[in-house]
Length: 450
Figure 1 (cartoon, one colour):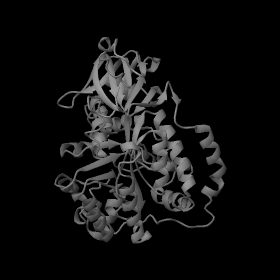
Figure 2: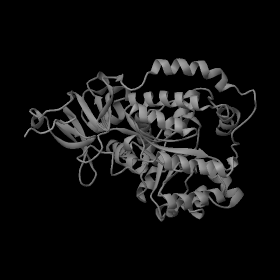
Figure 3: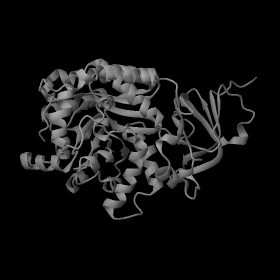
């Protein structure tokens, strides 16, 4: 009896692998066999020469990595890339971004999500955690374009109870969507825009429905200082007293996490993770960054992120990986932290754990979903290779990604997008831009008052 052909076989590549202690390693002249959207085996290239497959990719000169994960972003905000530049955080929010966001329609969100997904696929991102509005439109784009996503409908207490209710309804309706590629979360915006009663209700709903929470908290040191001055507690202490830390929670940014917060995070009843998006912190001139080393010491995974392109100008997780490593060296005064292998661990397994998919994606191994990117390292800027991990983190670029695969389906082959039409999106978004960026009405969807 002839064995059913594999769906996909990738041959001749070097594969990033994790050993039983999660140490990063590389297998050369390897092959990856994919069947039913899952990695069936990682073996030598010679072992698959006679194996039938519906599709084969010759990946000589390329490195196969687990698909990158953008652990916190606002994908539709690519429509606002460059619209608010060189401003402090409060002016950025109050004077520009929130007045513009009051104009958003579901069509704007859809087009922004399409452009964002195209950008991420081209940069080797196979999964993103999104926290925004009109998320039905984002879910539809994810289903169509083939990416994986962790989605939450954002809300403020100023929206009234219906904001929280809409977030729950979205999470329940889309959980497991797109053939299992969509997971969901409750998405209260932040402790300074969502009051304690709403946070406590959110925590209760999360436990009731088995949903995680995705929230901004202790984003910067100013937020923490203002919270201490006004309420006598840090934003992390607010999450503890409202029960949010007893849920599975993804905290965006956390550059304002203090030493006094660390025992609370370590003792949390739920799974806690933090997403770091370092480019934005540099751009806003925040004085601190995510305390990656302190979080590592208490077992908190830190996933890589970009935040929205309105603040970060980019959805390039590859850059976030390199910046995280460099900034950690600078802030700790220790060139041995983060190493390139540690940075790759953040980009793979730690990012997968941050969004609750640590057993599903994040490594190329039998039983894992086949979310894989192929990176060309034959260019002059990546040669010669003395330390492949360092080459990937500090020399390679997102533009070196040749092929992007999710669930065994090729979304980009040899730099050609297969599931999204960028020119038409750019054209339609451009036609809508004057109405979107108008601030003459003076309305805001919220006030930035930490």
